[in-house]
Image 1 (cartoon, each protein chain N blue to C red):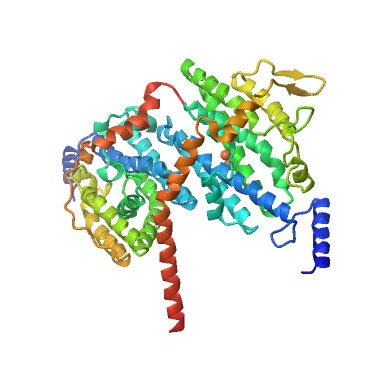
Image 2 (cartoon, rainbow over the protein chains, first blue to last red; image 1 turned 90 degrees about the vertical axis):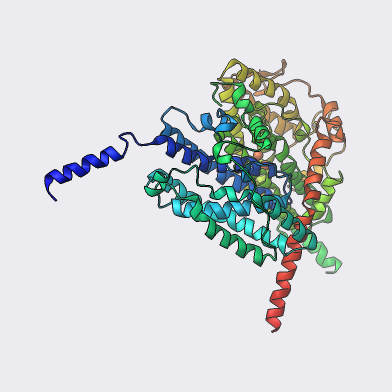
Length: 272
Length: 324
Ligand SMILES: [Fe+2]
Ligand SMILES: [Fe+2]
């Protein structure tokens, strides 16, 4: 290759790529990951001191703490990517509902039903395990590091959910019925996990982000295996129309945020 | 075991106690010792798990993600303390399910402090600083309790309680040095939690106005209790007053002052009539706390039954495999 043509190809490359990296696409991607973890932790925390047995208070506390830790790391990174001086708390407490990007699966009231919560945790943790085991190889160093830690944590969440789905599915008649109805209740909200409309194709091509659509088959395979072992049926419920990745949430999200954000917003500028 | 053997074993028990040794689960012990310990460990365990509620009340509203994580971990620690203590009670032949039943039916008590409501975020600070602080003063001597499993559980518990106490102090310190509204929130919490914290040590058990009866004397002879309620309360006051000064907060007692002669702080009259009302069940949150506990337990019954049924099925599978 001659010197002149090398120069030409350099020039054409820099013309194709914007001189400033597109931070808003990366910000949006990271925030969606963070919000799934944060809102799930908020719901999971509701079980502490209310679960079926003490060991479960401890286990659900562990899961909620892991998710909260993931959310904090991701929100902190999102704030850095954005470069507008927002830290984890600014993003968690001072964003309005329409700016949250989590899926409906994690935000809805779980009606204090342990079967619903375990169905939800199974669906979420299998998805997050598929996701983080790929994202740990991201070309974005921060995302890779967060994912490498998170994949070990969600592996435990997945084990925990699988253990309960097995016990409840293959326990008593009542538990079988209730676990099955928990699965049916949560199933319509799983399709949204694979929605890729919010992930910029450029990020996937660059190896920064994982294409959510690519997770559908491995997710489905894994969930089907667990349910078969638990003598439970794969639900045949159509997906719900949702819009979490665009900031269109369920009615319950407003209450969740009202509770979570109220104190911080009552004292703007205060440190805690 | 004939009567002579039993006499010899009980003499051995007494000599272990006299030598400040540890009684272990398989040792022969007087029935009263066993019963007293089961009851004390159970009520201690009940206090740990009921105590999860007032603080659990603020997990969803913690004002920063860092504080949310610390609070979640703390409430989770308390569940762990409950687990250690029920397990310690089980070494004496008690059963966790039965002990929970005694709690749920009101036949066993838990610490009355948890019958007060947590009304603001600053209560998370006041509970950590004062309530966990008082618990430490009560529990440190239990690390030398004559019953081995209880003593060892207390060593683990006390380590975590001192974290909780520091975290509570830090919450209040931040609030006290924050905005005017935050400072007021901190002072209000201390105003509400100070007296109930002093009541955590129980009724007066020394001096002319000591409450009659009580198990103090026998428990002391058995090496379960090491100090009187009043000694421990005084130790707590002496430890806490300088910390309140460091926080820049006022303890709500006009009679609180240093007594040069005694080398301790004098403090005002405790309203034990209130304590007895709360113990009787008439505190602000007694019904709420117990109802919540019973509801969680009942709502979870199908889950525990399923776990038992599943375990039985798997055990049957193994037996069938072994036979084949
Ligand atoms: Fe504790
Ligand atoms: Fe504690």
